[in-house]
Image (cartoon, rainbow, N blue to C red; front, side, top):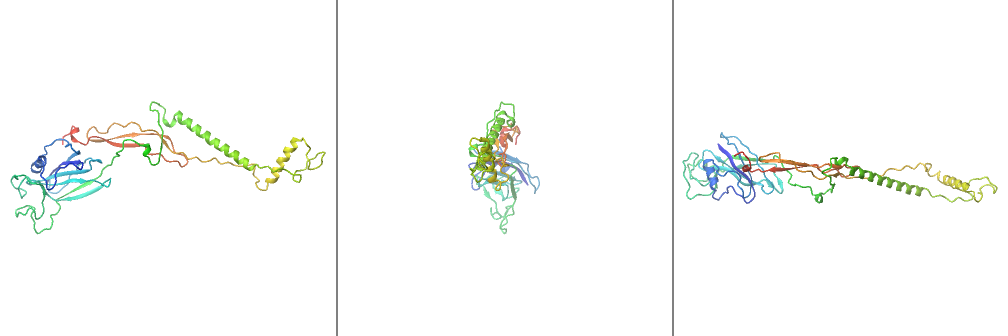
Length: 356
């Protein structure tokens, strides 16, 4: 049977609950022998979160607890007392849950019994026999301690079967960043500033409407310029010669235009242009122009204020939003995320009204 899973801490690389080969602290000694943990609340000095779990009342069973880690406190240490026993327990020392910059999704660890080095008993029901001077934590095996009365002494067995397992499962991962840095954004989304005091939505603000009008005017100007250039390229009039001029009745005979007859000259030029181009392009006067496509990237407003924390005790969530100022068009860059979530509160029990 195992006592409650306590204490358990998430901490940085410098903090230590216990260590094989070293003497334990008074708190660990008290817990290993009696199941009482004297220190109340957080441990400080590198501890982020402290947690506990209910005991396993039978010889076989399971218990669970939740705790919190972050990038600076990515290790977990815990212990659970074996009942009955002199000072035996199972536990983990500074187990790393972040590998190569990523949190482990799930992992299961088999553990052996440990002796706290504070009591000389060799059996489960041995009387209290204080170790003087205090010893160090050591691992109990099938051959050590080599005492014929030892409850774990099985010299013909290579290794004791696992007495307990610890399984860690990642429940949720929070975003660490608090702000959106436009200069660090790989896609270079366009961010605009919105007037927080303006009651009109950014999507329907006067500034955006004005920008839309200016953009349409620029596109129309581009179309007009393109049409002008295209017509100029098509209209290359051929100077009429005597052999190509159509017959014009006049006093000077056929094919000759009287000097000063401006209307006749213009009509002749038009007829000559039509005569020389109708074989190549019968639809020269019906030129169609396609409006050029202009890509437009998404534009977003600035982040709003963070919401209040969802929990008044322990770890909670807070979020903030931003709006789309102008959606993407014609294959432009899509909009970046419009919602951010981060954790808030404190995982330490000392900041709550609930006692562990």
